[in-house]
Image (cartoon, rainbow, N blue to C red):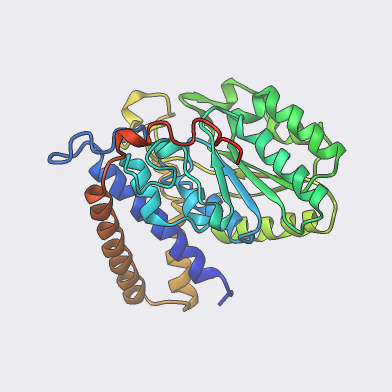
Length: 327
């Protein structure tokens, strides 16, 4: 049994159950518009978040995108502040102001989630610059999609990080689509690797549907950065099972090739890791079923706490907008 195989599965399963509960409750009868913010679900992509974050410490910073639920939870973010934020409650991690796309928990190093494509990458590089200037043994990990590598912000940030040998891990979750446009209609074959090579960045590639392979690659990339060798890129092929934005299945829209979604479902990272644990004898099916029941009960209780939490009052509208007067 590998030391991390069962915890990796538990973290993926937890994320999957949280997001499936979001999908079930979003707009459900009896709960109309209780979650008013858009939601970008990571169902299908759990292995990339868990595999990478398991290689990080609480002192390492993580930065994410509009599809941030998995990164937040994998980095150790607490469920109640996350759900409070999605429900727009004052118990939310940013006071109900940001919603699903703006999750953070600095207690565990989850520093920002920014929805504008590639805009979070310079923030992570700036944090890495500060870490180096302060002599810290920490690094900055930034998650982004394949579409972000087509943006100027990526190239400028990658170039700067390489020139300054900054401790930053660039994690590209290649789910093959920028909203509804597939990668092959946007870039020539192999473009993502060439984008990293153009800035002389070392690349670690792994199957983003395999949490253990992802974790092994992330551990090696992090070790390289901590050894002072500068930034690194991870290219992880993964796949989202739900629509770009929202809780539903969007296969009938026709932008995916026929049979494509079903083929990726057969590689479901949660199902695959469960089967691996049972085959190795690391856990029994009964034990994993009991784990799922326990997590589901905890998650359901968290949703009810979020629903019952108070909304922000009007008096808080100007909080965090203006700087405090100097003493």
